[in-house]
Amino acid sequence: MQVIQSINEIKEYFAGQKTAVALGAFDGLHIGHRAVIRRAVESGFLPVVFTFRNDPMEVLGGPVRYLTTVEERLCILESWGVQAVVMIDFAEVVNWPAERFVEMLFQELRAQVLSCGNDFRFGRRAAGTVDTLREACAAHGAVLHVTRSVLWQGETVSATRIRDALETGDAKAAAAMLGRPFGFEFEVVHGNHLGRTIGIPTINQHFPERFVLPRFGVYATAVHVGGAVYGGVTNVGVKPTVGSDRALAETWILDFAGDLYGSTLRLELLEFIRDEQKFPNLEALRERILEDAAAARVCFESYRKTKNK
Image (tube, rainbow, N blue to C red; front, side):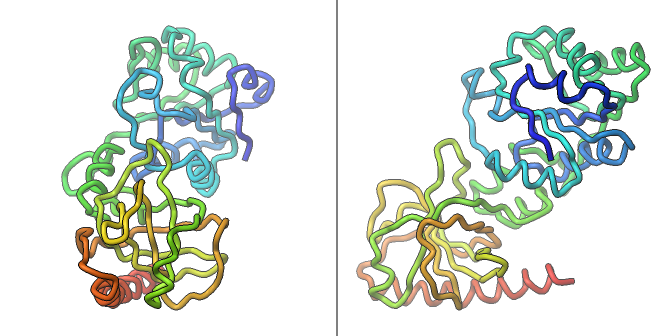
């Protein structure tokens, strides 16, 4: 899959090609996004996604809580059949009038098909709308697919709704809207190594700045190590019993032994077990982790059976 990271690269790469372009910010790549992107992939033309490396709110000054890293978004898009991604910095186009954006779609991206959600906006001060695209497609002999909002439990699936679910600990709701368990791939870093002293060796993964923070507490998890998937019990938070100066995910990988420091692992949150709490001593902490691990095993086995169907 080709990744184009600058407006200046677009015209040269797509010269002589006919494309179908899916448009959107696409953080999270949830089931609504997949419906939009599927129309481009199934068009018969070169399937392209036009998106941004950074959330537009980073440039516009609003709050940002990413659901996916750039690397994860690219992996998911490739798995969905996308063959080229234009992923630029929003600052490159923030001051473009809607007309310039339309020109880029047809003159530089060579679009024959456009696909977007029904709330898609573009151009300076979000002046461009779906109606603007409809008129432009008619003028250029192109096809526009506008995907209606995808619903879950009667309400529109959105990145905001998924973030809210995670921040209340509802990992199952987040998974339903994403179409997969919510997870992340971060480096395994050194901690204080206290887990080993109580027979519960753990790995630590720090959350990067501006990444969504799930509700602090203990989760049943799935941990991808190499080509295998293990059950895990993960504390998301600041480890109040032993202390941490920043939020992290600390995981006991069940039925696994090995040195993982410096590696990058994918961790998926399956189910919230309990809130984070402070224990009077390490022995009390150990006993509760063993209880949590038993619950996590049950959840992981259910997940594995469902995945293998």
